[in-house]
Length: 118
Image (cartoon, rainbow, N blue to C red; front, side):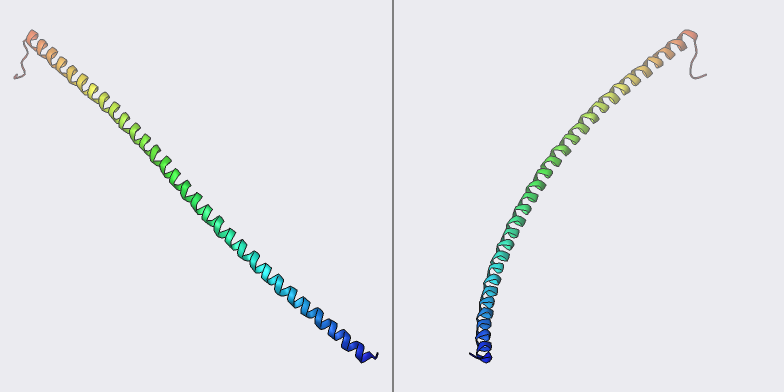
């Protein structure tokens, strides 16, 4: 066997090895593509779940906000009613006191003989 024969055999073996490496690279590329597809599907699924969760959380926050707003408004109405009642009582008391003062003034005027006309 000559060196040329050995070189031909070595080239042939390297060619076979290169074909095997190419086949392995194609297989690995296919597997990587499958993995990337699975990752993309998982990301889409997770994004869908996150969107659904955010939507549910927003709905719950809206409900809580509405309930709190209703409680605040209810408290404002009660407070306003209480204040109106207190103002009404104050005005009634004030009116009564004015009438009492007017009566007392009229009594004094009659007693002392004072008239408003001069």
